[in-house]
Length: 429
Ligand code: LLP
Image (cartoon, rainbow, N blue to C red):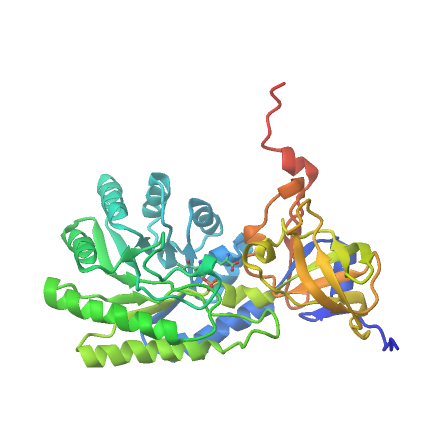
């Protein structure tokens, strides 16, 4: 028997999500400022204040708006940007440029020039050719740029193959073959306009184990030792990237931040002792870990289609354009029927998006109570790589982004309109 308990609405960060859906419409990205700030505080207590000479930068590709820049700035973190657009957002938000790091495996002349012009803190050099390119641009501008070199330590993180990046066969980073890396470091050491401070690696994203970080650190620290002995290069910094995994579903065995950062610091210290090296500054770059669990997406359920003895599809008013992760990475999510969250979930439905695409399924086999058109679905842990990877496929306008603060909620990105969709089109007939 389907027992109906008292039906209360699902609350997120203290707010009634059904009321939010009514007031702002759906689909709606909802982001909790409190959760983001708590994550930043955890970084401060468990990493920055616990270990000397450490820094943390938020990987803005996970979720970037000018308001997010303000939050990150006020928490004292740095910002990792990967394109002119991300850099522009940080500039417009007044983010302190000395805390910005520019990444990217194919930075354009304009992007590098913009970064140097604005005195960004670090540029992360992705390959040897780019080193010449940055040097040339910096020389033309009569400036010196502080850089780290991104390397591929040859470590494969245990995650989806589209988001592993530390392996040698990768479009990112400089491989650690002796000739290649020695050449890159020698060029940088001779350069007047590039100051090489150390190396950067990023093994992959959504990782749940610390062993690949430790292996990568051991590899890079041995390299620091060899470069010191062979070339007289003294590395002052080590950036170990981001990638700490978060909770999406019960399958995820989530570890606290310090599980990763303590082992990172232990590995760096251990290597410095064993190899007689000075301790470098250690930098981390989490993206998903800061914002992933701080976001949910609210949808309205529309068509419910039952195929007897096969499955029931419940379609929502968004899908692949606001969350391409299930289609791209087979990513899994949990969700609740927000207006029925105290009702017994006694059946399975598959949550489909509204795109003209068979692969537009948000959740296979979700446990729900009886559902109907008009019910509100809250998909959880959608704060990272949802808004930032959204598209207008099928000419579907992007949802608004609503920020929940202590006592107030405010729209930080307006819902796109049909007009917005045509704004850049030119009629040529
Ligand atoms: N640093 C670098 C150099 C990176 O490339 C990335 C992510 C990060 C930091 C932050 O990684 P996180 O802490 O967020 O895992 N779109 C994919 C994720 C791509 C990540 C790309 N790089 C997804 O939705 O899972």
